[in-house]
Amino acid sequence: MYILMVLVFVLGYAAIALEHPLKIDKAASALITGVLCWTIYILGAEGIVHYDQIPATLLELFSEGGKSMDHHETIIHYIAEYQLLEHVAEIASILFFLLGAMTIVEVVDAHEGFRLITDRVRTTNKVKLLWIISILTFFFSALLDNLTTAIVMSALLRKLMKDKEDLWIFAGMVVLAANAGGAWSPIGDVTTIMLWIGGQVTAMNIILMLLAPSLVCLLVPMLIVSLYMKGNVTRPIGGDDDHGNDPTSQSERKIVFIMGVCGLLFVPVFKTFTHLPPFMGMLLSLGVMWITTEILHRGKLAEEKAGQTVISVLKKVDIPTIFFFLGILSAVAALQSAGHLTALAGFLEKSVGDIYAINMIIGLLSSVVDNVPLVAGAMGMYDLGPYVQGQAYPVDHAFWEFLAYCAGTGGSCLIIGSAAGVAIMGIMKIDFIWYLKKISWLAFIGYISGAVTYIVMQSMH
Picture: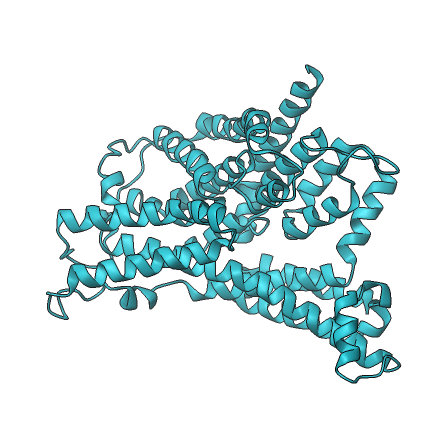
């Protein structure tokens, strides 16, 4: 059962990678992979899950329910089901966050709000545009997070260029920039947030120590692309307006754009003050924008506001991307519950040992499986504080800083290795193999360059 889960995951991963040759949508492959991994886990749970993995509180609840502890198989299946529901809660929070962010971006797009930015970007020169988009993404990702930034920049790119090859190249660079920008900010990437909240790193220190490596991680691929990128982009006719003649006024565009940007920026602030999950802040922002647009258009006829309301926009939200996220995250969660990722972390510790090498490998592995369980495994494996037996790594130790960098940027090496990559893959319909040929090598060079920069910085201390 243990090996069968890995085999199913690998086959499912291959089906996702070969989406275009197989002519099977990646969302379908991801969903089947996720369900099969959990099915195998549940059926073989008795041989995988042991009593020492069962939380004491659950055992107490099981006893209070009048169930005998002798029914080992029943208990094990109960625990496996509990693990599934626990992971579903985590995955659902990501999906609701993604759905809220995509809807807000679509509402702004429906009102042509992005023209406030695109109208100011006069250049059509590919190199100049590459630097503008990439640097904007890098810092925007640090303020928001890499997933939200990727969604926003995808909408902007559609307004700035028409050719599919140009769109895909720029979208690939957005993935690199969003992940690099999220790595040095305490709120820019989910793994950095985990380390910050867990007490492994402090906000100011992570900014000071990772800004330069993260910037190098982006600048090196940008310089390489700039050397062979030539010519100008072709702008979409009429701004690639999918909504016909835009019935919104200039003031309405400004209101919706400002509301959208402020709503997205409000999410990390809301999380900091309330300690509620980020998706709650995103849903609150969406609700406020929903009411705002209803008030803006309440005096208009139905045909005048067609396509402008949130209800009409929801029909255009990319649901297959949501299902793709659900499937791939479910599959990874099954591997995590079965102990595959913990075993992998233990193997790295025994066979490699060096903290820099371990983090580099974790970063590259995060391009294949979700970086969240990998970082969670590392946080559980390595002790925080100086007063424990064995090696300990106190707050702001180089291990934690380098882990934040590697887990944040290593996922760029494959398009489904990060939340930003998965979102852009769904929105832009980017082919996995195309990204592997055109962008992965750039991401790897940037990743190594940033890592070397960090190690050099450490040696100078």
